[in-house]
Length: 201
Image (cartoon, rainbow, N blue to C red):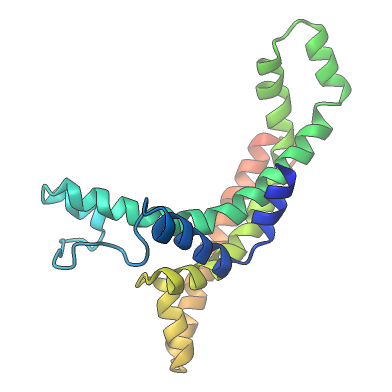
């Protein structure tokens, strides 16, 4: 399992996106490949295909849009999940060997209660910090994933702006990413202070 986690975590986003597309679309034909929707003639009021399909009563469109989201979401989430999971595993291993955990077990608390009440809460600060670092990488991976899967989103727009030397567009995207990164880190700081009262905002 550890070898698989290291392999997934160290695989570049463009390679993992291509491998996921190759196996789940080309070989197994379980999931759709590139694009956002198979219904080319569909145009909803909001531009969000999942919501638009529900609004106009075409649930098959919503289902198709959800299926098209799976591979890009997996390609983006796998490296982050592996990094955060490894961080949580290391922190939890350290916490569960502490004296207060042994005391809780000695008092007769169940292993589930010990894990949830004493283990996860005290081990949460390290994976939350790792999550903050991974969000920065997520924005960079977004550019590659949208290009590979052919999604007309902010990432593809950024690539096109760089290619055409559109400086105002590049600056606008940088500002948007900066604001999002700041907001995410603020939420992570709040989460860390809730998990560990010793951390002051």
